[in-house]
Image (cartoon, rainbow, N blue to C red; front, side):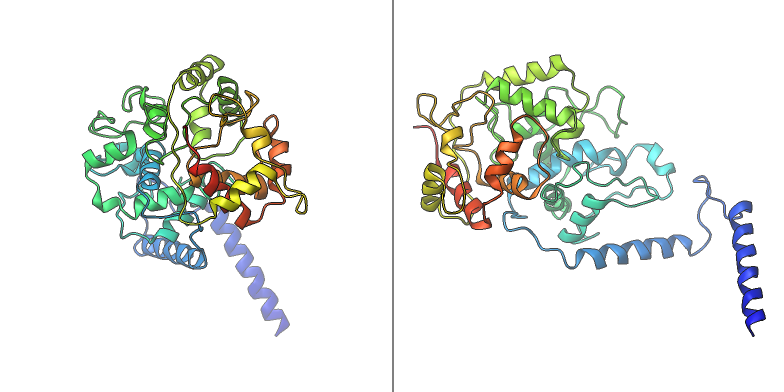
Length: 364
């Protein structure tokens, strides 16, 4: 009996080796799969996504119905996904139709929000579908999920307005590939999320108008060099040279605007006020105001130019940033270690209360 088992194993090993070295299955994208193979692969993919997504929970700060979050997802889709998948009213480039599997045109019914998140966060092996560029930014792909679950409600015009802030932002019939000139207007690169006025298009992205040139330069450089993770910002900042970064920083720093933050639906601003002003000696929490307030005519600007203003920023972004400094990925940019130390003692309640307080603060 043992002899038969060993002989069978040897035969399987020989057969497996022959299959590997002779490569009888044609992997050319120019020919279709054998009957049934594609169905098996796609069925496995769907089950794998569903199983891994079922236990996910939508984070407390994420409102999948938030128009700002949907716009953010639309903007990222336009610059990160449109090339392969096309978009509402925008066909795919013919090149991708020669891929096997060909990236599909999407619909809201393909997956639920948690499954869209999982796919955007992790991607697929052997398909060309990448994982999220900000490797540890679990908060970011929810914007793409918020957009994709509403995908069917968009036509080309409404998609362009959501993604770019104006119709006609994408000015070709089909999708161009990266490196080719043309499709998306260069001037929309920052404004599509942060707004022409630097105020973040009503929650689509953080407010930048009036932040110091030194801070904006530091952050853009950190994104460009991989010292600060973000699936939104790293791909856009990576091609920028020093001159482009300086120009963008100077442009937004030179804007004058009134900041009025949007609060989250939770958090106690009064407790946040006390914590921001005094910290907590018992819990080893420093005062936020000691660095982030005290300068400017209204006292809401930071004392140092390499420190950002947060008073009047939207609560969603303050909450995410504090969670990032506490839980990671912590940037390796200058002075980030100070925020890491300040955020480590914070509880989820502390973070929510601080976000509620600073979002409520605005120019007098």
